[in-house]
Length: 312
Image (cartoon, rainbow, N blue to C red; front, side, top):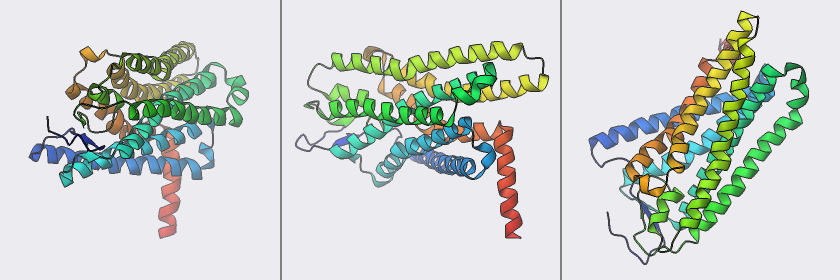
């Protein structure tokens, strides 16, 4: 581990990629994924905004998911790429706090938003007559605002605590972004109370929503299996499988990382798992929702059809 000036208040991020040709190729791949995620999520937000047929609770929630993914991947990849290409690994004390705050906010808010999307599909399929009431525009807005506010409050509490920990060891964080659990080994105080709070927070914002999503889709699949319409069953299964794919990519590595005790965790494994929920998932979400959703594909056809006809 590199030595670090103890008089400095900055941190140093050891990073993810090795300083060789393989590392450079992987970085170029991550940069490509980053721009693909920027384009895909921006296009999804624009598509939902301009196409009136997508002005439904499901797609309003999806537009918020795309916005969160935009902020999510922008929190980690640009700094990682800059540090690697410049050869500098430092990040300021304030910059580390800002990065940690936005990362945790997006992580918690997205977990709650995915649960809201699961509830939307549950009501639409299991209680279609009650859908206009249970998923009104006001209720949808409350879900979105609630996800952002609760995620921000939880993130602020963790970030403030992390910035007030006395660091008397090396300030080298063995990660490619300021992840609070990766900062705890650098503290010169016992952090078992905070580690317990991380477990509680992960359970509240990730594990319980995941259980809620599982229960919702269990009811949905039961209801779908009893449908008489073959077309209705196919549409419902397509929608549910799309959402479950996103949920699996997001929750599985996250829960596995943060619910394990520190004694069973390794920095290398944590960094690899973090690639899934900080880089790959934000890129995959718009692809999964667009390629497996006829309404989104139809909106894309109408939008680009109009665009090309005007160009002619």
